[in-house]
Length: 610
Image 1 (tube, rainbow, N blue to C red):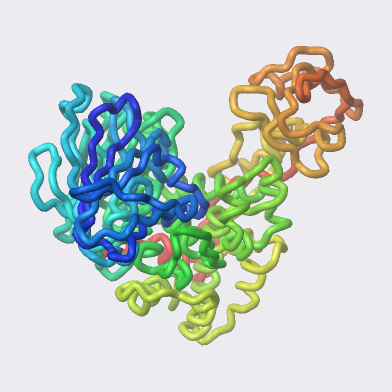
Image 2 (cartoon, rainbow, N blue to C red; image 1 turned 180 degrees about the vertical axis):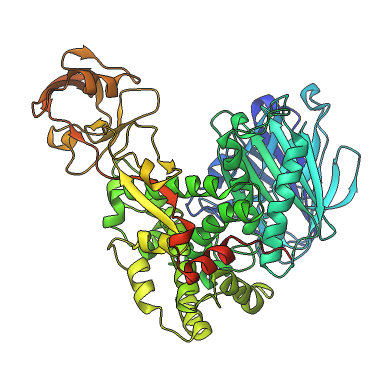
């Protein structure tokens, strides 16, 4: 038996104390290991760097610990129960690691639980001890770990079937505002902690999330794998993100993302929050149980590469907002507005002309998760392009089979064949399944979308459901396009904003990145340069666009002053109108659509709930 005891008596020092008892250690010397990455986030994070101290002892003596490498240790041979005592500094406010202060305590098992190598398949126990700190008086424990013997606040003993399950159940300990609903006899709990607005509309969250989750369940033939589900949600200014688990998700959102009681029309940010919840919930099937063969047998000590992240994250990113539409939580106009913004992000990423989608998936470890100032010129997101390709695959399947087969059918087939038994999918197996299921070759589609950097036929895909696309230059830095009411309201006649081809870091005039072949690059500007003046007028974070429009004379260069490594530089720059990289979508007139377009549009929008 292996039992961990978690203490956090001084939240102000951000350190968990862990006591690990191993009743039957390896007599040759028990090996201990901590993961270097967490499933669902494909980057080496070296969680062991947060271990502050580590000792081992038996009932009679202190035991020697040999550090093998950065995340592996071996305890000297011992024939009796051993105890490993260690402290973990926890101050990463994200969904991937651990964080504690006097407002809450949160951890993923990959940050706190050393693996008893050789015993990882045995049952694990976790005791979460109540804290003596006055800050924690009203805190409660939220987790999908199985409770064995706990008090009303959730402190006490929990268990997991094995180490993999143990590290797949994050724990939140705090005061929270809660919502709940039940689907398929499965309780769903939504826990909000942190900067939760006093006016949060809990009943609306329950109503909307329940129908969104029901939509996903129906897509997979009504099967809901877990016995309970938790949305562990930290609310923090400018927060956004999520990480999937088998019976829960850890979320990060902003206070502005949450609905306000009594408001007739909620902000657009609320749809962003619902989309995040929808995305992580869809991962219950697609990633946590239906997954690439490489990730099924992943070694958490080193990178595990696959070309299939475009499918498992991209398809999930396609269905997250689609479920909002199908469940009736948002309108078709709202959905197209969200899709237009996704397309805008894709068209603005010049890296789409350099990196294929398959390479984006494979190189996620070193490129997507370790982006530098040249990322916009060099990489494409397997989330963004993956979602667009998923949409294209759905449209192509529907058209080539005259509406008889869709991505919905493919997902159900994959679930029935691979997901239920959690059998891994080989690298190009999905492409073969599409061919076998439809009786048609989709090799040209997959070669173009996955292994080529040629432009995608996005207008053709949209037209299959009666949607038109218009591309125009951006009007401002915040302009991401959206839905427009009618084709004759296209805003091509509006004057585009002038551009120098760089993006500034938020709230500053420091350059974050410079686009290739842009005026900024031609002028010699570089990332981390601080722009201080344009045509001898002071530049600020909020006035650069205005300075360009007010003081630029057509065809003439402007002077621009900037600091680079503390030295003032002056150069000449000639702004240019922005390129056509901002997407507007609109519905084509119904009377102009062919019967197949109408059939595809109706079946694509239709709820899976029967």
